[in-house]
Length: 332
Image 1: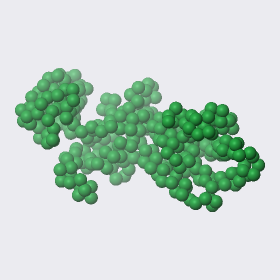
Image 2 (image 1 turned 135 degrees about the vertical axis):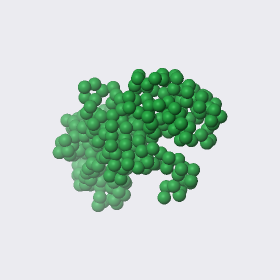
Image 3 (image 1 turned 180 degrees about the horizontal axis):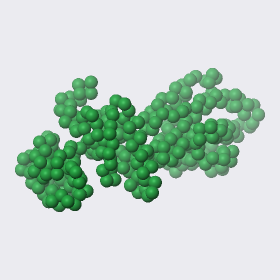
């Protein structure tokens, strides 16, 4: 179905994709003694995101990973890997034996040159036992590519970059690279309870916390049956979308109308919104304790509305013992 939509040229490109993907980690490479924990969680999240439709074997390659698939990779695998936090970038790669002549032959056979005018070759040796230096590899391959395809060499802004990774066992080469979600693998920083309102701010806040390694659990306060279920349905759709960036979690739907009615009858109007928020914090914290979460997350930005001034935020936070994280606090 995908191929019928994008046309034969794109179909040919994806059919030529290899069965191996090179994944480079984001901040994980900066970790010390607990780096293994972060890498293990990233491997787990990659498998979970790909699911049973794409069984994969994962091996280490220096500070990177190799994903070995049973079938050639395609757009569905690329789309899935783009959603994995902790991945800096990734590339479908070909492999060959450690022979410069074989490498040259394979690249000239596989390299798609249509529609490009310039190129660069960038070799990286993980193994110093290879008889050619990185500069010599670049020069050998660059000359062959230039002669066959009549392309210009541009080391600053090439239309296509051919990357070479020389390892102790094999050589990997590629030219299509994709940006990852970066950040840290979901789960390394524990759980957080995210208050979802149904607007844009709170799901963005949840997304940002997931990118810092947190697993969000969600709570939404609604006024049904006194209002329609539109806010509930919207939040359910938001959680479904957010879960594509982390693994399945819970959404708590809390009926809040009776509390609102009591506040309206007992309290002056200028205080009502603050009191609503204080009760929401109490309830969210109680749910967070039962979930084993360690913080509350909201989408508030400083002074965006009247309830988000510093005095009002201080009043809202006063009822919570957990930290209240506001990743959007300085944004407009």
